[in-house]
Length: 123
Image 1: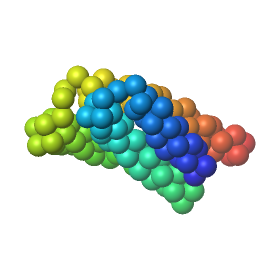
Image 2: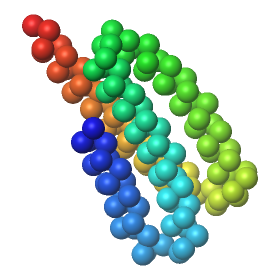
Image 3: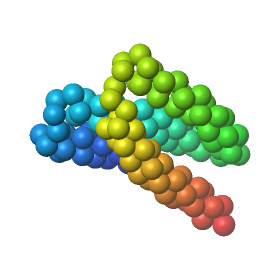
């Protein structure tokens, strides 16, 4: 649970750190580019941690289902941001892609650590 606080805090801090260097509208687009990947990574990590604590054998099924849900979520999220909110594509997409890559790298490392703990404790 503690790493999730760090992920949320670091994401918010990075967004706030670059905001003074951007126009107001651009900083809003950067923030929305961060929010989707942050929400998905946070929820995925919370579910993985709870599943691992309760039923470790179900973790793979959860991750496959989470992957499918993320595909649908991200398609809808990007469509809403670009079509309905009419955000400027370039700052939103650059922010979205950057946060997506970084947050999913962190998520993979945290999942590896979580699963590694389980493997070592079973010996």
